[in-house]
Amino acid sequence: MPFTFVEIEEHKTRKLVLLFAVLVLLYIVSIIALVWGSRLILGIERQPSLGEAFSLVCIAVIIAALHWAVSTYRLVDRVLTAILAKPLDPTDTYHQRLKNIIEEVSVATGGRYQIEPYVMPTVAMNACAVADFSGRAAIAVTEGCLARLNRAQLEGVIGHEAAHIASGDSLSRSVFCGLFELHEEALKRLTGVFSDSAGRRVTIRGRGGALILFVMAVLWVTNTAKRLAELCVSREQEYRADATAVRLTRNPLGLAEALRLIETHWRGIGTDGDSLSTIFILDPGAQYLSEQDGFFADWFSTHPPTHRRIDALLGMAHLSIANFNEMMALHHGKRARQLPPDKPGEVPSRRWSVWLDGTWRGPLTLEQLAGLESLTPESWLRPDGEQAVKPASHEPSVLAVLQRRYGHAGQAPQPGKTECPNCRLQLTQVLYEGVPLDACPACRGCYVMPDQVSRILAREEYAFSDRIKRLAATMPTLSVAGRITKRFNAWPGNRMQHRQCPKCGSGVVRKFFTNQYLIEVEQCWVCGLAWFDKDELELLQYLYEEAKAKGQSTFLEPA
Image (cartoon, rainbow, N blue to C red):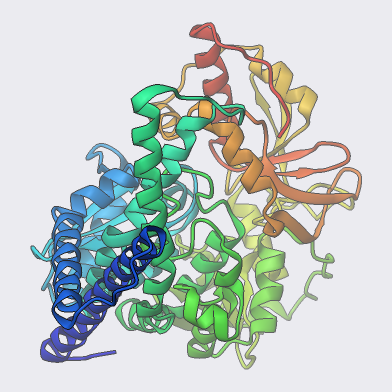
């Protein structure tokens, strides 16, 4: 990656010149094919003169220049509009945290760009950066990322996107997006004109239909040309941005965790803007080539396989991929075997280092760890004298401290008692709308059976917070929910290996709870027991009551 502003400008100029050359070549080939086809149809055998050929090349250059000028005009605004990005709400604490992180990372990059923060009103998990020739730059993060990522993970994501902006990669990717992907997105939306929400074809007669078909033909040609232009967008840019993010945040584990979480959750497939894959940290459409190696994947995919990026980050953190995969599987759902408690007299002699604020602190005694207010079940620990790293919830002595903190003082682990799939803390029974649920005292997630959901939705005891109302406004409309559900449920990454239902022991899948309301849950495919993360059950209840108030159908069709 270039390290000086001069090198960055030279590198950026070369990429833009190459991109314009590809655009000119596209129009030259298209015009030659059009002229040759016309001559063949009309039976003209005379070959074009050198002057005519030169004129065709000039026409191609002019058309390419017009295409370039129109596509890059107010580029940041057009891309932000396409992905439905909105300015931050100054009263939202999650938005304020995003604003603070972007300001901190902007300073760390040298302050050359005043990066504008935006949020994408969707519960999917993704983030993107965009820039234009006027010097504007913006980073947009989904509400799903703000809700699911902790500060260290979010810093890694923002650092990655800021690295694209600082290196000039964001400008070239934004130009590529404006030249080709915005047209692909327009083609996708126009295609929807010919079908209703149920997927049935709709016939449009008259001049309006003919005009739409003509525009679709032009956009289809542009979309086809995009495949050739993708050769100008190297996969290596993602690796360089990851490395720069680590330099900015000093926390390779934070970005590695964020990539794994985004990879395993809904990235936005099926929503407006998922065609603009180049500018996102992970491909929203989860294209097949994005997760493949080899010649064709390297040439025709703009994103490298996520597992390769995580491997590189773990190398910087001196952690093996096997240990990371094991910890993430345990940390995000796999139920570990209960370890025997430490023997009396062993606890005081043990020490651990804890990963906080991008650095290892310690070694610390158990008493010192207990005094850290920032210690959570998700904090990474490394026992003194060992290389293995594990979440705090998987160290029995530290887990006992966390249990005391969350109201389990003196309680030994009970065999068969349900644990939180994220924190490994023993779940406690709470009443939600009068229904007893097993909930985690730390992360506030809960297990719910389908019949319990029906009872909860029938009751209206409490008002909803402004945050729940804002989250509800980010949900896709009912008219597109079915299309999104169909594409998301077909994604093979939803099958959760090493996860078992705590009730019946069957397999668990990640899916939307219903076809109408896209609340992402982890649900047993046999008994239906579902794990709702914090706010998700309340969000489902709010959406249901809003639909009922508007006189819409409230039948919950399982996804």
